[in-house]
Length: 283
Image (cartoon, rainbow, N blue to C red; front, side, top):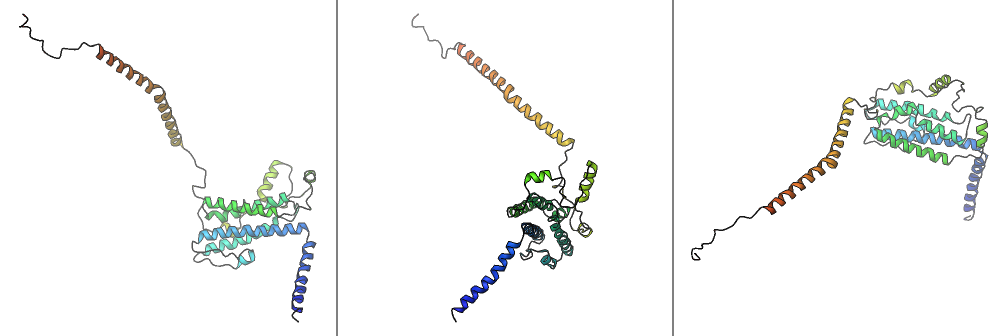
């Protein structure tokens, strides 16, 4: 009886491991890459929402268990901020659609990284992180880029075509986002504008945050700035002229005057210091 229990446990363990191993072997690399893409998108969405939530609530912390869109759908811990709750719910639905960008058409590593990087320039993503200061937005994007690099490192490229085959058949491969190829530059530009994802009505119409601050815009210079720069340059040139030309000449003149004064003092006859001696006795 005591020996049968370890054997029974071992048999149950083998019974669970063998089907899982067979299932993993039966999964194609394309399916594994699609599952990796979806998992990476979930990680990008979670980190984005976590950063925005922690910045909006100083005493709050975004739960680490909300790593899926389904779990975040029921999250309602937004004390006193119903507008922010609505914004999170809208972005949670929009960000779930990012998974549809990969799996149709090309499925190589280049397309994998391209579609993940396109999330970081999506209009919905940029609108959602506007609450963050500029330096924190930069730090967030860099951290998300590292997540994309980690996902690309796990990509299975065993079934990818050779680079020369991709170059030869590039015109025949449909784009991942379903856009049709255009033959004129105007048509290509219009197709690119249509392909960019537009923010949904609820997400863009949320009057939560102010427009970008002056720090986010490029600085503009007027005539006063250029006049200040010109005066600073003139002052620098005048200082260099004084140091290299006027001061050495002035010092040379002072040295010449000092030598002339010293020569005059040495050549001047000395006056007698006392009265002449009496010579009455000699006379």
